[in-house]
Length: 447
Image 1 (spheres, rainbow, N blue to C red):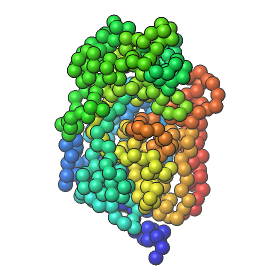
Image 2 (spheres, rainbow, N blue to C red; image 1 turned 180 degrees about the vertical axis):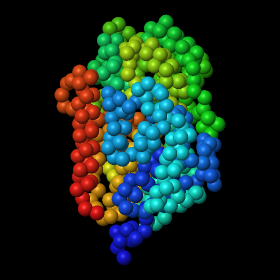
Image 3 (cartoon, helix red, strand yellow; image 1 turned 90 degrees about the vertical axis):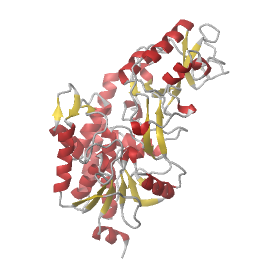
Image 4 (spheres, helix red, strand yellow; image 1 turned 90 degrees about the horizontal axis):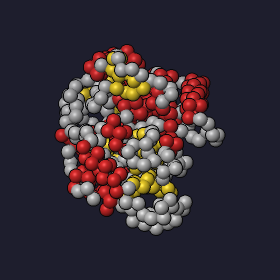
């Protein structure tokens, strides 16, 4: 029996009943294929889980803006076009939140659980899944709190010594929002204009004011299951400040080897910005991983010279996470390169956020279904939000791969200079047009 017929006769396993898992299961049934959806609750609850329902929202009830003037809004529209269960549930369980799409958490999870349980092609199995089956198509969508047993199995299959369990992220900025009149480009001991870093010079007064505001700023408390202590290499910036007001000047803000061309001298301290992508549309604030709340990050980090009008593509955070080093491991279809019977979806792939995780479930479900039916898998167009995310997680070429939200910095270059509003309008049009084209290609294939 060949594998195609074997898969047709059997079904696709989806491991994990979170946002990505339910999306994958829904997509698979749209192709007429049966699904076994494994969910460990209520047999086993992690310290983050509270409800027995599927697609539980852990931290906040907002899935951000609906406006296509924002990258997150474009992503939601793409998902609507692809028959997203998560967006359907959100649209039907909204609570007032201005331009944001916020939901009643209980109604949201009840809507999704009810949809899955009533789907005759889905067998929902409430049990721990600890070992990936051979000769069966599997979608791993277990999220940031994957069980230790399954983590060990994934490490064996991917030949990784460890997955990332603790996530330390510095903020990422839109390069267009930096005031270049106040900064200079240099690497330590290299001349201005020759270095890889953008440097924001601070005077003595500016430095101590920044340190004091970081210490005073409101922080996000870690959950009990995240309280694992800090590595010295990922110390939150506020913890460094609390160790002493000079700590940053001898750490990530040390001015040694940097000469400000405006003064011909080293500044008292310097915040360095490092390119996050090859097109230099995104820069991260080096060493500024943080537990500051998002509003406080906007307020305090905009005190840094040159960042007064900074636009944040991603805020800093520190929390427990489990994700693959996807570049080199996953292909453009979210399959393991060394075992194309295994797909990954959701946050474990290296995306960050509710909607981004769910979107990966949609695509993993589509691609697993195509493989199951013996049809040619089609890459999601790079012009789309979904395609841009997949390109990032499967093709990132830097040294420090970390999860990312959808943002305007990861879409393909438009090849022309436009004002911000026009640029975003064109990105949105290209993205939605490309998803409609993608749908047409999928629909044209006979099943």
